[in-house]
Amino acid sequence: MRAPAAAPPTDMAALLLALERRADPYLCLPAYGAAGATGAQAGLARILLARERLKLAFAALPFTPVRFLERLAQEQRPAVLRRLARNPASSAAVLLNVAQHLPDQETRIAVAGHANAPALLLAGLAGDADTVVRGALLRNPATPTLVLHRLHVGASPAEAALLARHPQADAALLLAIAARGVPAATLELVAHPACPPALLNAAWRDPDPAFRRRCAGNPALARAAARSLLGDPDPAVRAEAVRATAGGRAGAGEDPAARVRRAQARHLRLPRALAMALSRDPDVWVRTWLARNPRLPNTVLLALCRDDAAQVRHAAGRNPQCPGDALAALATDGDAWVRASVADRPDLPADALRALEGDAHVDVSSAVARNPKARGPALVARARHADADVRRAVALNPCAPALALQPLLADPYPLNRAMAVRHPNLADADAWSLADDLEPQVRFAVGARMVARLAAHAPMQRAHAAEFSPAL
Image (tube, rainbow, N blue to C red; front, side):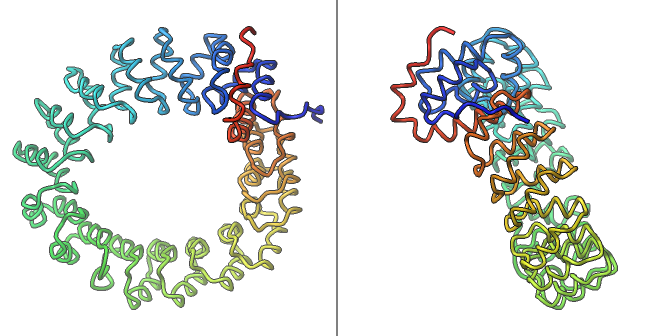
């Protein structure tokens, strides 16, 4: 049983003083750079930088505040800088600093592939002789078009193929790549939305079905050409054409190839007659994809709710258009996986949900625990369930009452405690009681919750934030 905790801080100034007294790095981390805590950053930094291993840990954590990552970028220790280069939360300023102080290969590779790397930095790396660095640039979807043009100069056939599929490639670059005649690169560029029409018009008639399939999935392909590919002799081409068809038909009718019929089943503009035919398809995956289709006629969806295959009934139970009476019937299905498919739906009829609250199967229990319409006693019982995933589902329920969340504060799994602490229905006093938890991720969650709650009122308290003691 947990010992009674001190009263939680009620404003940002009180929180900062409490953080100073505890001097726990993980509890303090969320406060660095937060609204109302700017005057306390020096004191927070002394706690956060107290040990070298903390610098390494915080430099790698994706939830470390960007302001503190920028502070860590001032460190000259190579191991810290390398972790910052790989951290997806690092800002452009952090990456510029890192690249300036540590220009080794490992860092250049990490920066070249980073989504937040500024264009100027990526442009500088475009002239890098290291093929691995160039490859990281080519795989970075944020690499600008001008940098791609620079990379095309002297590009190998493999690099040309990467350039041809890059989302920032423009028509001029694709034309230049096509002029080189590299088959792998040409195959990539005909699938690119920026592919020039002249190239597409030639490629969709190519005798090689690989080229026709790539063209069939290209949204830039002319509508008449796309319709023609719906009747292509190659099943893979027809399937891709069906997937890419935005309006009109999803093929002329039932196709002899199962892969095409699976693509048809997922089509939102499915003719009624074809939908009915596909609902009787011998391929279970055709019926499964069809059952997930939110634009099905009601009679077809109801038939799929009674399908012999449990996976089809499960898919029908996940369909957002499944009517209430069908959901209630699926809630009594003999297969627990099917019952679980409807147990977390807030539109499940109340009587059916009440019955499932007594279902002992772990999958059903977990789904009920996520249902925002589940009753408090059912959630309290699941918060004490033997299965950790079921207990965690309670913390994921946006409507879970405090009484159901409180047992999770003593959960043996740290992740469950951390998730419970962040729940808005939990009282601040209950969350603050875990400020001394043994697990760093739980203490971080407590700090993040308190900062988020109090920072909204922080502007009027900024003068008090400077009261954070200059000496620890």
